[in-house]
Amino acid sequence: MEKQRNICQLEELGLSCIGCCGFDFTDKKEVIEALDKNTVEFEDFSDMAEFRDRHPKDILRISGICYNLVWKDKGKGIIFCPLHSDLPGNKGKDLRERHCHPEHLCRTAYEFSRWSMEKQDRFVRFLRSKDMDWYEYSISIDDGSLLDEFDKKKV
Image (cartoon, rainbow, N blue to C red):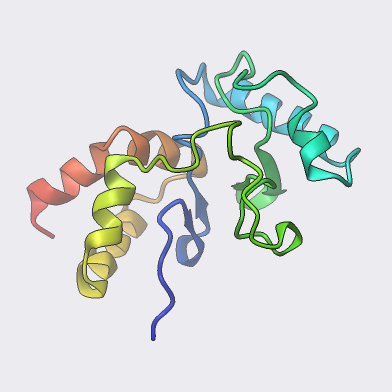
């Protein structure tokens, strides 16, 4: 059985989407500064629940991103949420529960998850042709503009 692709962390293109991990992003520079701050704070915690609870529930940074997003690899633009249930250290427990909206899927992620592997391959090739960074990718995945463009082209 083939590994299920995750459009939120599209490993084959090295792209991370943070589109649903905040609202009304200010600009890329401020989002980067917020990720830098989050990452420094993350390094001070070994307990993920304490890391999560260091700021009031459902509060976003001024840049619009969640206080819990951190750099996995800043040089490559890979971002992740250390509270996610898929991470080995969390042993399947979703530490985002009652703190954010882990059940949320944007329209692009929802549609992508329902497609055949062949259509997903076409979409990934389409994304590769765009040569985006993580910020452009996040905004365009979350707002559905990449999905709309892909559908119009009938790629």
